[in-house]
Image (cartoon, rainbow over all chains, first blue to last red; front, top):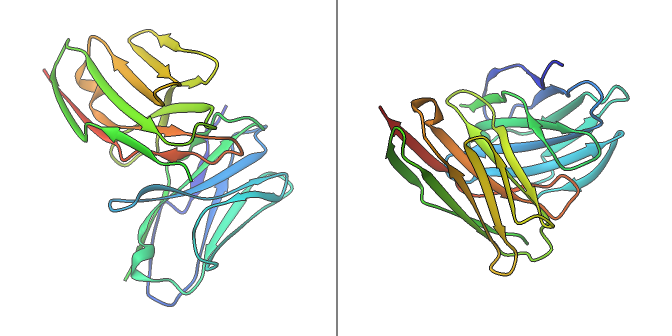
Length: 111
Length: 111
């Protein structure tokens, strides 16, 4: 089976812009979770979607949003980008259970 | 909310030695504890996981132990090899795919 894929792999944006990241889960997986990884804060949970519904959300401002499509692919959007949003954004997929498999991530740099 | 502490932050061993990484968690409702290995430029890779109804689990050179009373769990790697060099993360979950991660341990295995 193919693993979790994320596009794009690298992205450079300027403050105030918005960005959309994409994640394709492992075939058959219906749950997609998003995490932010930074040197200062480590790995932090953003939100999780299952069958197009957000089931859980972390402590991030409303500028961070996501959605899931009927084919389980997911997108996350960050509006009004800030310098502190520079990070590696990771997507993980799972069946309805706990075991999560991560993609390679999208590295976002905000200038 | 859940808090996971991980020690040590760096660990240097000689090839063939054993390595032990320890984590403690705060929420007694946590019931799932995965360990991930992250190599440079890649997403975290699941290497082993354990559930709260099991005290120990082993997979070849890797083992994880869980002490629910003390709320700590450990990763043991025996016969370390240079390719084991990476950053290792522990995590805890109470469910709904929300993983709370430790701060990571950089393991360096010298030939």
